[in-house]
Image 1 (cartoon, one colour):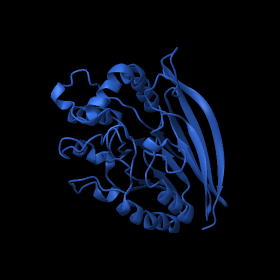
Image 2: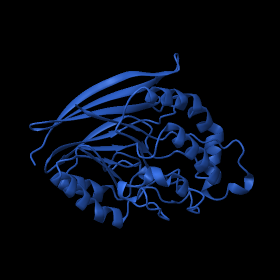
Image 3: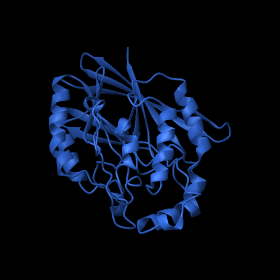
Image 4: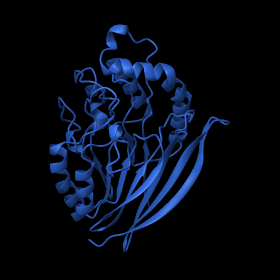
Length: 306
């Protein structure tokens, strides 16, 4: 029987309707203006409600949320997102990595990311409270290893870049190699695109060349990201075979300004003698019906010899 999981990204689910002027210092003021002029019309709660209803009808081994739950990373936004996550499901079934909007500026851990701690935690940390998020994260569900990476860190105004940093890059090879020895299907998920040249300079992952080199050296079976608010399919060529790199649009977007309309992806993985079969089913929002409906379907055969 195949194992099933899904990915959604960039829900931007919070509202800034009651924000106070004193909270809008530095980069947050620019983010608020963007929300007031455009984002509040593009990212809609009714779309997320439809997505939640669509997810409720399926059984998943894991739901991956690849960042940007907030607009400007205010503590109140983290509380709103925490409520949404708990309504969506149990932390053991939902794995989260943050995005650049969530780390808009430096903010106290206890009033921000601590509220999402259970959703970011590795299996090993589930019963051990930590003061800061620990990435890379690792969750194993059956034959699948989910490896989460955080690219979220404060950046200067007008910059939407992300950075993994040396610690995560140094730990990633061991995680990839161990999962390969266990003959697991390795899913790496992060917010920014890890493929060089795919994003504008001010939106890029600053250490994309380093992680791309690691993925090509050690391999993975699937890499998932968001950030660009559009659907993309790329492919890396690793020593063990092809590595699909897939991006989904914002999970709440109406597509009013040229971006893709809301979409998320469902995945089904099954082992066969020569490797893995991966089925990708997109679910796209349909404004006329207010529902998510079937989109494109793709099946990939990933040849692997362990």
